[in-house]
Image (cartoon, rainbow, N blue to C red; front, side, top):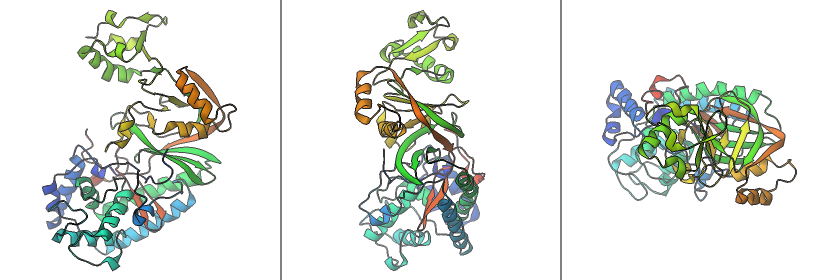
Length: 425
């Protein structure tokens, strides 16, 4: 669980890396600008939604907020951001930062003066910092603030993903805010209840909200572009400790069968058992893996540390057969791309969320839960007071004080062609 410090969501704009030479040619013409944006979108990688912010940076710390996305305050702040960005666009937008050298603290280069101007226009750097060619501590803090607002690693280094995000034109960002205003307005108008969980898909982030404040914020891994996490509303009704994992047909066909053709020991090594329609166990060696006949069988993985859901499965009614869960691959939460599941949502530090969900369920404090997980025994727990759950798609919002959060439009739902090109993986 990440207590505040995680930033918000979206923009598929830089779902990919961009060739450094490509961005340098941006400012010469409208055609060059479009080409540069397309390069950003066509790149195979993008920035990071990692929300481990550097609290030591005062500029960076201002990005953190207890404010939920689904709140009337967020609506007001997005409207204010739209007014601000409209003025920026009317004034000619912001300059493109050329790629001449790796810009970071201590570097002196002519492109730093352009970087300063760019950061001043977006409000990340105070005008009092002045214009110079020196990448000083003021610029370092401003770049970290910019990175935090865009869900990038706040390291202060102007890498290709930060430059890609920085060189998205102001008018496109304005359109992104306008599109998401209606989404935020709809969320704020709904009665979310005293406490609820919200999964923001483009931000790959989870908010546990109580009393109008975010009490827990978790990094998530959500669906791939071709296996998208759905938009839904439900209630969390069950937490299963040490769950069995049953592979869906899509994973059997797309992943497991090809793996078995390469490595016949895959199922045994991963403690995945096969069962027929009569619930009789089927030996893997009796299956013809050169066909797709195996999809007729049930693939069930035993509980344990290598289980695909590890310690926890969180259930809620939905027509998509998706759920939330733990994962044995904790390092994936630090990846640049966190769109890597088959539609379900993986939750970092899920035990903290479990404790919060089961707070009113008798007999399930943290100590008891940890002991149960250690035992390895499959243990379904009905949640006494089912908690409302919302999977939403918000790629741009604001938490006030000039903090505008922008993320990749990973599923191309923002209706802006310039930010929805090159989504092939």
